[in-house]
Image (tube, rainbow, N blue to C red; front, top):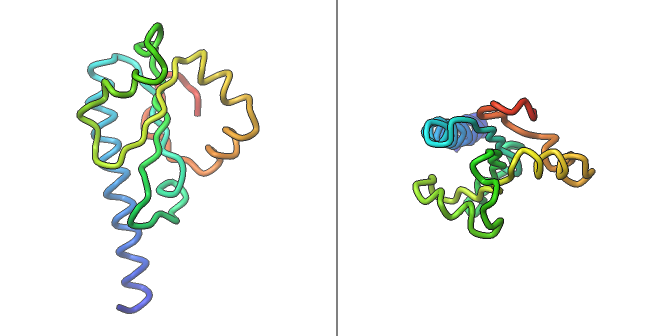
Length: 118
């Protein structure tokens, strides 16, 4: 396959995943009322491979008071390979002060941002 076709196929696959995450986030936003969803990691950077997870930070007040380990399990209708991190707005503010998270989100795709995080 010529290089330009490979590049077009990769871009199309990335767009497909972004569109899939966007559609899911919009459905989730209807249930939660407010949501920030940020795609990061290999799909955001464009260096994904066959085994890559789809890394997304989900921020919602809905997660408040719920066990951190299990709160994302309630997202049982998520697209395949979606690996969400579910934060409350306060947890997001604290995490985003850390250099590691700022670097992880340097290459990001903002899906929805009701909390004005991005």
